Length: 142
Image 1 (spheres, one colour):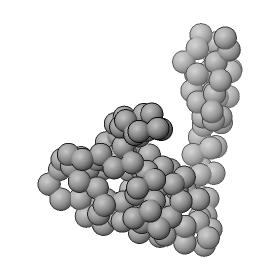
Image 2 (cartoon, one colour):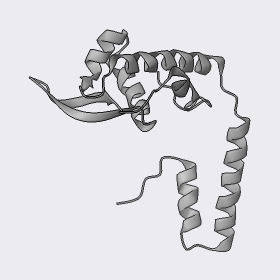
Image 3 (cartoon, helix red, strand yellow):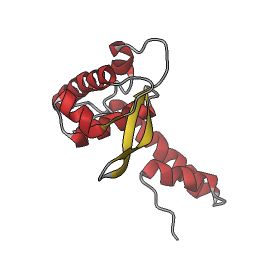
């Protein structure tokens, strides 16, 4: 089965690590430098910033609804927070990646296993901690 690369960066890093000619490796390295330069100069749109601000508020609301030892499923969070289950799932995934919450399987009657979310047992997670993650607009969910 062929390897599927999600981004140009993944492909170029694979080329650099492979046993290929020096010219190809240098080309891949130059392309990565060009990607870095392009990404550094990229402007975040006003709508993306507005989505990020809205998402930060939803993330805070998610954290406020969760407790450390009792898993809560996305549909219950969506009802409590007032947004779609899909948005909760996307933002919860980001919170899991950022280490604020954990995910586990929860058995729900007539639905089977669904993802449940719990707070990570930590000292104090503040709204400022959430806003600091992904300040470049990368963690924006619609």
